Every structure is written in C-alpha cells, then in structure tokens.
View 1 (cartoon, rainbow, N blue to C red):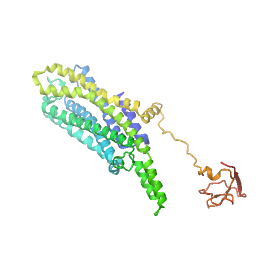
View 2 (view 1 turned 90 degrees about the vertical axis):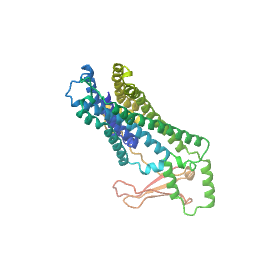
View 3 (view 1 turned 45 degrees about the vertical axis):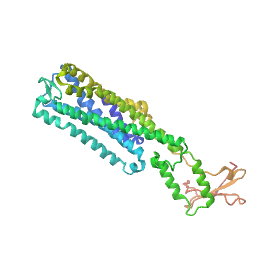
View 4 (view 1 turned 30 degrees about the vertical axis):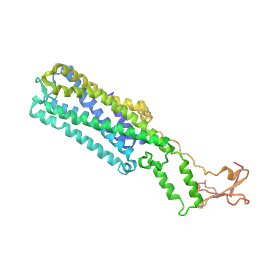
Length: 395
C-alpha cells in the first residue's frame, strides 16, 4: 500500500494540471520519499525481524540501510516543514510570494530539502564503515549505536523542524481567521490588499484600471466609489475558505506525522539521556515497535489526500481503472450577448455575408440605428450564393 499509494500521488501531480502548484510539487517529492521507504527500508527491516534482529546481510550494508532510513525519515519531516513555511509566506505576503513562486523556484526549494536530509544521513555510513560498533549492538543487531549522533540527529532531523512546522501552521490559521473577521466586519478589498489571498482579484483590479478612460466623468467616479464601498469581496472570502480547506488537509497530514513519529524520537532521546538507568531491553523493544508505526505513516498520506481532496480522489479512481487521460470538456460556443431591453418588442435583421474577409454586421431596424453588434469573421461553407436574410423575433 505504501508503494502503490505514493505512486498514485506522483502520477496525479505529474498528469493533472489542476495539481501543478508549489504545494503539490512538495507533496509529490514527499511521496517519492515515502515510496522509497516502502521500497528500500521496510523490506530490510522486516527481514531483520524475521531473523530475530540478527543482521542476515553483509555487514557493510548495515550502515547503508540505516543511512537510507534516516535520509527518508528526515526528508519527510523537512518536506512538511517546507510546506508549512511556503504556505505561510504565500498567505502573509501573496504578491511578493507570487513573484518568486514558479515551478523552477519550487524545484530549488525541494532540492534544498533533499540536500539538508542528505547532509544529516551521510555521516552514518562514514562512521559505520570506520567503526562497526557504532552501527551494531552485541555485534549482531544493526542499529545506530552512537549516543551523540542519536541526540543531535534527533533534534536536527525532527524536533527543530517540528517546532517550526507547528509555529508556522498556527500563524497561518491566525492570519486566515484575521482576514475572515475583517471581511465579516465589512472591510473593503482595498483595506485587505496588504494581506489578500486572492491574487486573481488583484489582477482583475489592475486590468479594470487599465481599461478605464483617461478622463472619466465626475458622475461615474461618484457611482464607482459608492459601489466599492457597498461591494462585498466575495472572491476574497471564497479564497479564504479554499485556503482553510487546504490548511485543514495539510493540518491532518502534520498531525498524523506528529502522532506516528513522536513516540519513536522521544523514546530515542530518553534511551540516550537516561543511559543505564533505563531498562535498555525495554527501550529496544519500544523502538522496534515505534519505528514501524513511523513507517506506517508513509502509507497514510495518500489516504488523507483521497478522503479530503476531490482532484486526487478522481485522479486515483481514473488510474486504478487504467484511464490515464485527463477529462476534456467539449468546447463551449460563445454567442454575442445583447441586452434584452435593447431588442424587446422589436425585430432585428441579421445579414450574414459569405465569402468575404470583412466582419459581418448585425444592425437593427432603421428606426433604431444605434443598436449594432460586431461579429468576428465567420467560417461559412463554400457556396457562392445570394445573401441569407434571417429575422429574429423579439427576445
């Protein structure tokens, strides 16, 4: 399930255009780490259990296996930490974030996450190959046996990123609630521009400003200002609701990871700090159980996405049915719109000229010369016949 579920996540982010954003790129990289846990780490751990924790493979593979275990576990927490930081920056400073938020920038951030994870795990094979006592207990059980590295590595790879993740997630929820309260109190979009989530609204305002005449009439300005004061920013409120839903899903992922991995790392720290005062055999048994609880976390994330995200759920359903093509909607024919009041109770003659590059013109009766619609060049069948006259009755 761990391998198959994460492969579905990788396929969904790769093939579904709706999932092409920075957060989902991080989730795809996280899925790669979780998939590699199921592919390279869990089978060897299961093999060790079958041999009663006596390492059955060549001894030089022991530090390599421990290094991979630390690498992918560290990568998981680092990805979640990076996601929480990236989302907080995007919500707190959306305009600045949008300038530097591209696919290339997301890949660079993911590369930094993997570089940190590799930096934490690389010393293990170096230490283990030099001194086997650092990776073997009783000369038989393959486990990291360097107290200093266990202590420092646990803080660097888990507790520090976890603290950052919790703080940024709480700040994200605070900002979202603050924005929602400001909207409910009747603030205009201009007052929310500094913390607005809806970048599309910002773009629409800029476009509208460009389309305004250079010297608008004073009456138009007065009406426009009144509309701004009366207008409720529904688009921004919808964006806040969307961010809340996304934060809820990510919050569940964070919480699951916290519940699954905290017992292992807390026990790992206690086994070093208490030393001989603790029952080492009990600690070893607890660590063997808790590490498998952490491994299970790698297979839970795809289930979370399936339960709470419609795009992932639909994509997974299609892939399981061997349908790898994105659903394409039929093209919608756009018809020119005319105000109903302009045509009410009147007839409109429509003359369509064939075999000409000039756009066709639809004009009303002579009594109403002001009603006119411009239609773009029409593709008509090749038939050099006379002009077709249509009469459209009242709308």
